[in-house]
Length: 266
View (cartoon, rainbow, N blue to C red):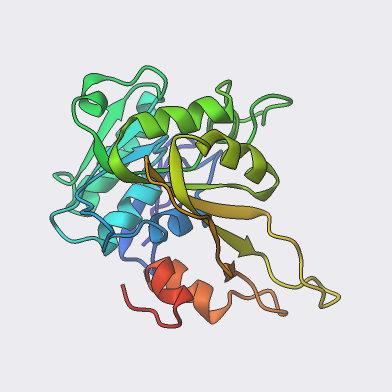
């Protein structure tokens, strides 16, 4: 379902996970892409350890949080932390559209100085899609600038996310592959059992496989364990269409772990 905006500032509705998630987003500016859907799919819901309370740090319009709720049981609740009031309000409206307003609480605030609803109790999992640019030229559109650029260094962003976890809780991050070294450095000494899942774009026009541009990294607070480099997910085939595995996640709503194991169960 899509609602044509009456005015340029009227939000429009789009569907995620083949229409199972209804999402409101600004008619102009930043548009939700596949990253939050992949991020939500990477959150393990079957352990180790219970996952009942989840924080979406930098929730934006709530795409990742809503996609996670579409896969999770009714005992899972998400708190979305977002600095921009209009964006947070859109996410809350989307939660109501899906009938999940009791399961998604949007909270306004900053990650480095979070409000009481975020600090009162630790979370079982934190998912986050940090802005990809820390400095440099920002996109001219304010919405895109807020989504893609920040003054918070990546190490501080990751550290603030780890601060919100219970012992052995899990952090799930999607970020640029060329920042993998900085991301792993930010985890060193605080989180272990690190898992790296590359997101491969697929072959180029010449048939040659291209390097990963995005990675998903998972780690557990205070846990010691070796790092694991997973085969990852190939997003596109030679014809540019999504691979069946990517379709299972992006449209079928499958858990990323299930797809990587070779089936599309949740």
